[in-house]
Length: 240
Image (cartoon, rainbow, N blue to C red):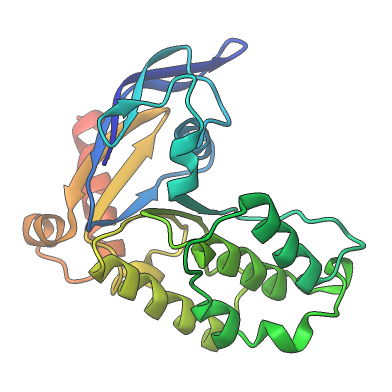
């Protein structure tokens, strides 16, 4: 579905992505994790066409995304912090996005209803809490029934009920065969969701493993403990 080969990106003298190779397939829910500054955001923005790599290739469904834009219609993106016009209401923002997309396809309004956003349609965006803004971002990401979902810290700021609603929705979409990429610092949130894990460090892919293999290798049942064990083992090897 998404293939990344020898991807490199510099900002000034800073190497942000270094020879990144990845393949992400349909039907997988993949966590993209790593310390701050490891290149996660730049990688996501490269896939979305918001950052142009210095070298390498990104393919979407077998076709290079270079100088292309239509593939983006098949991606639902939920940013970590959604930014919307302050003076617009929730209803106006959703209507505006629908008009921009101008599609005849059936819309997925599951989250719109589950979050009960229709009751808040007259609220201006500048008055919303961070959690409610996240609900708007999540609703828009799923609205056009995309083949790929890229969710950046999706549960950050959400209350426990809203977080569970979103996680259930992610599981439903994964079962439909969609590719879902999630960045998160809360590994405990991912235990029931993800099938694969990509760990980035210093602009490189440190490892990309299936969750079942990761747990088997480390003899751990929780993803966070499995990752910690691999990192500790790597550090010990370096020190020795």
